[in-house]
Image (cartoon, rainbow, N blue to C red):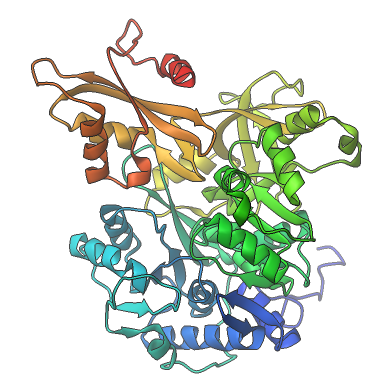
Length: 540
């Protein structure tokens, strides 16, 4: 045994499992009177934020909820949603933040699949949750949140959120995880089938990725972060924890509205925000009377499709500095960044846009990234031409898919997480994604399975065949485009009938925005040639 191992034991003095809930403990102790959360006219300090999160944790424990128990929440970007990101893990339970854009049937599936022990729901979204519970087999207790900025909705469940918090005490003795590998969050992502997959995060990964965000995006105690990114999406890309880690201020936003965004940026001195490319587009094309001027530079990080040069230029003129990130639900959100070397500042706008199109290099908190031959796993040449699969590994990769060992093994089996995205590697080591594998459509930051849409279309009695591909869109990045072959003798079918059918059977944002009728191109073996359809969609 090495001399550096003899007599040097791990104990409570020199080791503690990492958990992002400790970020709030530190911020509440260091900055108890500093504003932590702004929501409309509400201003809440870090001392209050910590106390309320502790109360939530204690109230959950008093009901017997602890390790291995999922607590679901359906809410916009509100103070209660932030408190859930701390209080639920503080109870030892697993946070399940549900996508507010999903349909009732999918939410019912999640509640059943996660075996949720308790549900928190915003009053405005209570009717949607009520529909979901009617379809679910699991019927856990429900607590409704009476957010002051909610519009409409109704109470649902046994009591209101503030009354539930009153059941708990702000005890500092919440149980730290005995192992940082312990599950702490469950996020659902669209897969290649109709049902979503449950991605499981652990305490260590959430802690580490939050620190990676702080480093990569330049977060400090003086930052003011505007919540244009949904907190349900990869737990807000872990910025729910990253902003607190540095003692910054969370500026909440229930819905993306350009007028409100500009107003909040100017009124509260916002310095950082994130969002899908559509957020940038909405800000650029907002009416002139909504574009409130502000003196500070606002750093905005975006994922998905790289912003074109016109977008970069327009955002810059309004006072925004754009950062291009890449990640997936399986990687806790951001995992690579198009790090910007100083010499790129001298490039013209088109060249800058070309560089920004790259997904870049791996986060400082990720162990590694490679672009590999999908068959051999060997890294492709750094020539900017040879296409391979983008692969990642490190502490910020998911534990796996809940109740799905086959999919977990396929994704992680060889010691690398296979993203499914096809990329090239440039000579400087920067990766650039060239195509999406499978047929996932990324629209407005949301993943949409083309197979799920096709399944719905095939159920229509007047449709014989259907294929769905991504169509480039200036506003949404991509939108679903359906190519449909009508069933012979079934009667006429039009675009409105197809879209109405889709809205009836799945979430409205998944509905094809373009529908084309005719025969589908096929190989000699009868397989639909989607690559041909993708080219056609680009011309529509």
